[in-house]
Amino acid sequence: MKDESKQAVAQSLAILVGLIFLIFGISKLTNPPEFAQNIRNYRWDFLPAWFIRFGAVVLPWWEIAAGLAIFRSSWRRPACWMIGGMTTLFIVAVISALHRGLDIDCGCFGGGAKVGAKALALEIGILASVGAILRYCPNKEIKAGSDLDKSHNGDE
Image 1 (cartoon, rainbow, N blue to C red):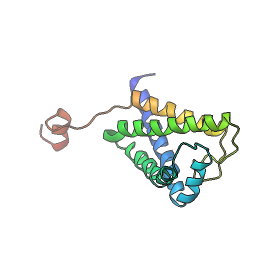
Image 2 (image 1 turned 90 degrees about the vertical axis):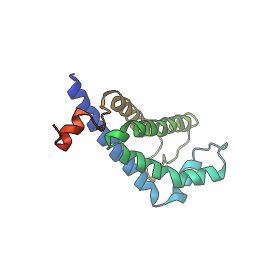
Image 3 (image 1 turned 90 degrees about the horizontal axis):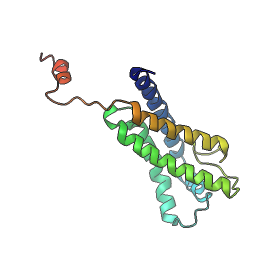
Image 4 (image 1 turned 60 degrees about the vertical axis):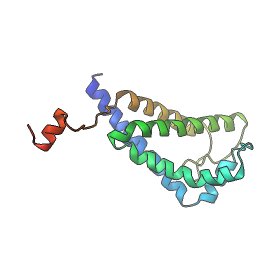
């Protein structure tokens, strides 16, 4: 596959991952107490109650911010690292829940989706997509004085 094709696929993946994270975040905004309960259902008893409440309020905004940031090329790499970190944590949570036989709502879309193979496959797909985006998306910014900047401004 040529570099241009890889970049096009990676940019398409960035749009897809961005939209998924926007949906994740927006779906959780409407009911933070329900999302807090979804977090509690994972039974990570070492997490203090204040941290769960804080996470239920802040995490949807992080998902929305990362989902928006990945659309902008100059913010794409930090957004990918942010999404990758959140996704890795969630993969650990899902594997932990599956290992312990918990039959719970995953909390992905604000409710209704169960922890299981589908949720795990989705998250692994997101993580693989983030890897491809980091590897193949160009991280070009227009810098003052560059040839691209001069042609953009009409100074040739």
